[in-house]
Amino acid sequence: MNKQISIVGWGSCSALGHEPGAIWTAYATHAATAIRWQQHLGAWGAALPGASEAALEHLRQSRKAYARLDRSVLLAMLAGERAAAMAGWAGEPQPVGLQIGSSRGATGLWEQYYGQYTAGEPLPPQVSPLTTAGNLATHTAQHLGLTGLVSDSSITCSTALHAVANAVVWLESGRYDRFLAGGAEAPLTPFTVAQMKALKIYASDEAAAYPNRALEADKTANTMVLGEGSALFALATNAPQPLALIKGMGYAREATPTLTAVSAQGDGIRQAMAQAWQEAGQPPVDVVICHSPGTVRGDASERNAIRQVFGENIPSLASNKWKLGHTLGASGGLSLELALLLLQHQTWVPVPYLPPAEAPQKISNVLVNALGFGGNAVSLLVGL
Image (cartoon, rainbow, N blue to C red; front, side, top):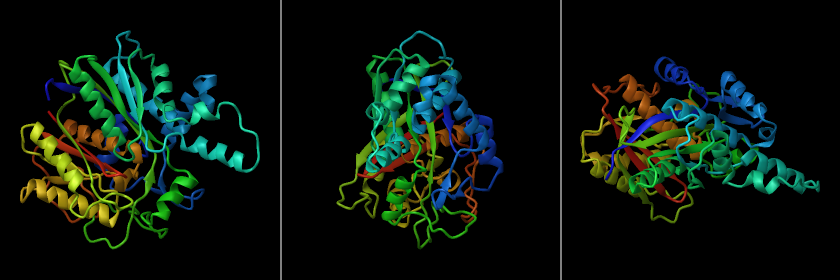
């Protein structure tokens, strides 16, 4: 890193809520999952709680034009509001760059309009502008009044961390000293769930206390469950009182021809982790927040990669997918949020169905992983 890149604020919305205090309470005191049976999907899923749903609806009704926006766009806007407010940027005229990622983009609207098309109904003129991927970033920038670069990206499930990595590069270049970056996803739709079930990676319909069992080493069936959410981060150079520093980042791609591009030894995520750790100067890593989605092959691949990087000194392993589901393009951002909460509160959050493990005595450095279809791997090392 050729400049000190600080995280000075963040905002999120997920099945755990949209207020940092409530989110931390859900992590620290509740061993229960937020995953529930979704009757309209005929599958497990992690939807927003009532208070967050109300906040999203309030945002939708705040302007006439917002009523027709996709749910994923509103999630991005809500997270952006909160990140800018925490950073103290709200209403300031200085240019702020913005990059938001999403794996599938405006999924709900696309399915709605495609249903109308296949039924032979005429389509309204706003179909194209409201279902493009860039819709998330442009509307968020307009809502927040940002005047800098606005960009959107889609790199499947590693999208949010890719957005943060790109923001770091912009900040290091000196063209900007403030940037908002992250991801948003609203995948609790029939077609998206059907896609995951077609891959045979979705959790069984059977009743279970923990439908998603991410990190469980001896599971014999896939247990991935989708969730909805967003997370945006306010990044700055040379901030006087940062919440955390981005000390290193790494990125790589799996060279495997499989549909999901997951190798047995986790070559891509191994390279990304090693690069991020090396760039940070190889400090002691206290926690790795794993991407592990709850699939047999994906979880095992990441465990193998972690062993190759750290040998016998494996850090404590954390996950939030058992609790809030796999939010696809937003998942890396919500994992980064968990990293910030662990650093802030210095309290370990165990995975309740795993064997008890020794908690880290102090949490100073956290490595956050994300891996998406196509084998795109990103790791960020953040610390105090």
